[in-house]
Image (cartoon, rainbow, N blue to C red; front, side):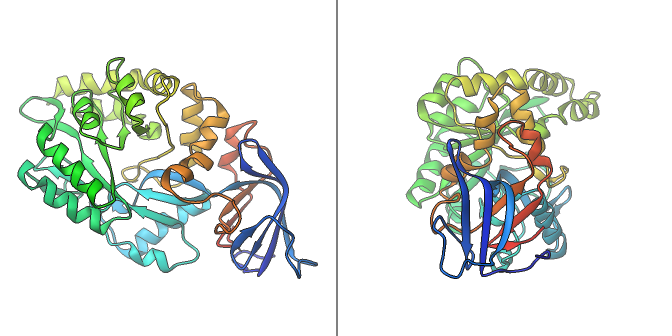
Length: 366
């Protein structure tokens, strides 16, 4: 069967990982949907063999964004295709100024769960990325993005304060509480970009659902995250850029540069301590902006390097991540979105870097 061929019935055989401990010899795709029973008319069906996983999840990705701000549809398409070829078939887009709804009509592109556009404090984030507002407008803008998104809203919780010369929290506690309450009233969850320590307690006690990066977690805040069930998406492939960022800002902001280096140096210990405490950890690359797309396998490998058991790191981009985002894996009736590998990714997560076949809506893409 050639690339991009659509087969009404497709057999996937070998070792199909429906869950960490649920391995089947075969499943089927019929008209783009998974079934666990051999369907009528299966004789002579197209067949894929190997180790099959649900389509991978990148829970922190930006389609429609580059280092300068919004991009055109052709560039957005290229970003989504790059993620698809890496096996990423479900994306939580953690903030984008571009309208990418047209992707929903494309059967050959990953499915996207959008968090709307970033909401940041005035002059406290990357230019052209966010709604830049003052605290009095936070509730209104959160409500706006909750209505525009797919069940998520993205705040910028901290950023460099040029007067302080370091990272500081962006929002007063009262406004954050009111904004998160409004998002929850509208049925949306809230996440926040946070590098440093200061903003975390207020955000969690205000009811936030997730924190991106979370490099500022400490022994004081880790138990609070665990108690409240607040997830983190560490984006370790992005945190790897901190030393270069620090070097670039050394002359003007030496306190900030030293802080960024400290956060980088303890990154693996931070993630492992969070995992050990029971904090849910999920895979996200922070692709878009200055970071390339298609890095999901590298991020899984980084989680393992941090000390997360390989099977748990695998779950953080497959079964567990899909459950967290409210999307199916390979259960009966689910969209036939899966990736096939030559070897068992449970034995070595580096296998994820070399998908042999990608199936999206029952269609063999690559």
